[in-house]
Image (cartoon, rainbow, N blue to C red; front, side, top):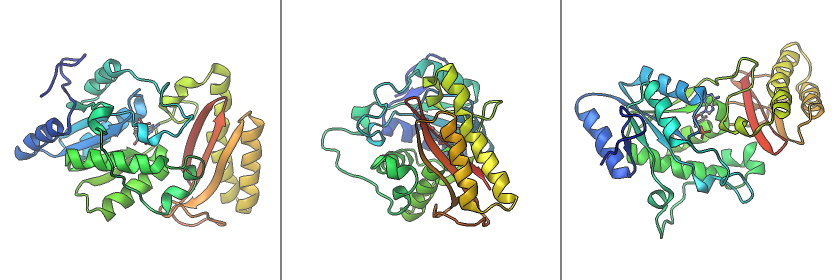
Length: 287
Ligand code: AMP
């Protein structure tokens, strides 16, 4: 059952069965379908995933679900920004054909008892300060991929660790959907777009720039021959001096295994995360 949405050209389905039926109907007509999972409060970064999906497939389907299982106690589940009508307009404008927006009781009905846990990768980086977060992510993404049976699914490189975990899970569980990454979309000044940027005051927004700038400066230093540890220490000082109340990590890692690197290597990625005011921001760049 589809229902009319705020935008007449974007139908909404709210059950896995309706999602599956709509996608299967397209696939029977020989059309390839791309799934773009999101938590809503959409910005140009999310819409870039839709555009990327339309480059890989004929039809783009987005999902919006603020997944309680990936928020820890004391995190921002209750205040996470929600705007389904505005999001539907943006998705239709980007060429998306269907929105899947299930409610919590549909995703996790009474008696729900299954979890997907990737081992290893979720213990590193963000996993150290957000225990259980990536189990919630892996579980909801497994459900979305399983319900949709799309040909491809697109995730942002902004959440590099999440993308690595999803690739691992999809390969391990023989999920037939091809997983694709999409480059980070940034504001003109370099701050990575994030739904959580809406929490930042003007002052915090200005100081948050220290994170992408420190990533760039650290990369320059490492490529210029500075030892990795010294370059990371200088980057950390810059971020803290900008007023980040907490720096969770600034690390050079292997882009696939996410293991720390003490020296530059092919596929290396610089990863950073910290808290400004009460908002936790993450970012990363290729070395
Ligand atoms: P979220 O709604 O924050 O869960 O994000 C949904 C998807 O959009 C994830 O795959 C994110 O990695 C991706 N995404 C979020 N922000 C950006 C961005 N600035 N650039 C590219 N992808 C993004």
